[in-house]
Image 1 (cartoon, helix red, strand yellow):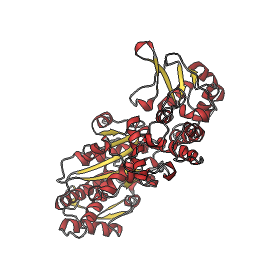
Image 2 (cartoon, one colour; image 1 turned 90 degrees about the vertical axis):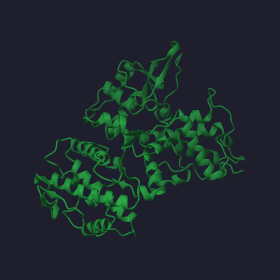
Image 3 (cartoon, rainbow, N blue to C red; image 1 turned 120 degrees about the horizontal axis):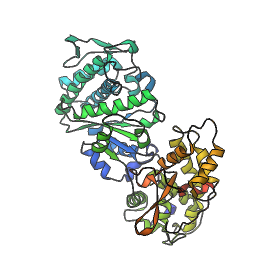
Image 4 (spheres, one colour; image 1 turned 90 degrees about the horizontal axis):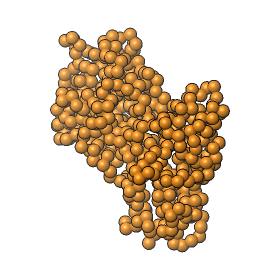
Length: 483
């Protein structure tokens, strides 16, 4: 049987850099998205959003086509396409509907290659006339000066007057731009839905991926643009105007979604949203899928470790999971670090021993700090001052009053977060948790990554730094009776 010596790695931490389809794990999220009921997929960075997109678009291209990637998207150019006749919340719905319609037109034309119908021929003419290709780049679609209206079964009209083209050249001063965008989008979507029926596609999906590449920081305009995207996707999905079933799906980081507010947000979150959540059981299955793809179909986790407990009678997997945010990328990083340590030994057959997990923790802790930098810096560039305030306590657990004293001493004038606000933000990103009473007179530590619905307790006095940051912050453990 193959051993860890034969394993190159547990994979790349970023799905876009990994052969993720070789060991993709089907979860409840896959079923929810496949059902066509999901509009929004939320998850922390590294929770598997891009892996899901790759699974659908590369495994089932006949329904899912290519994802609509918003990496390097011209947000500033799109910002000028304001529908002045709509409310602030809906100011960008029309422009997103048009972008979605053009991408769907591209999808059905390419899915219908070799199958002639008047509708597909007309959509092809529209795309070629405007973009010179049936597969225009997403970032170029709304950056053009003008779109010619050709090829469509029923051309767009405003007040009974047919449009020959739509000009984007003077975006800021056009009071009818929103009407023109909506009308063209409707014409395209009607032909797209007809083509879907002609091609016998039961549901056509469009996946919006890599939104976070341009939305790390949200000003008021970008908030309205994000809201507009979600509302446009919902309108197209649930309008009932079109014969073919169309399912746009938006993938978004949870911390970005938390920054926007509009009247239907709660309804969308509760009825049309999938939250990507992992637990120890599903993460173990993910690990074993990867082992089996490289080392053999019957291998289990127990085959690659010696079974001895870590300090405190903790199994190795639990020791590792407690240092992660229960995300696939954290687990993969930890195991890759541990594998590198294990391979430095000459033991045969090679399996994990306790020292492999102990020796890799410092490197892993630096990784986790850098991951948190990526998430928190756009919202709070000075957040490490709060982490340093935790470090000054020297122990992984600390008292609120001590933190406040340390933080005030470290806080710089450009840091706009008070000590109380700083603690709340640290909790929001699971850098710290707090001690809460539990049944039977004991207590337990609550971290937000284990319960995303849990709110910050502003009265909590006993707090704890996430143990994955222990080595980076140079903290010692301190055990609390009953915790």
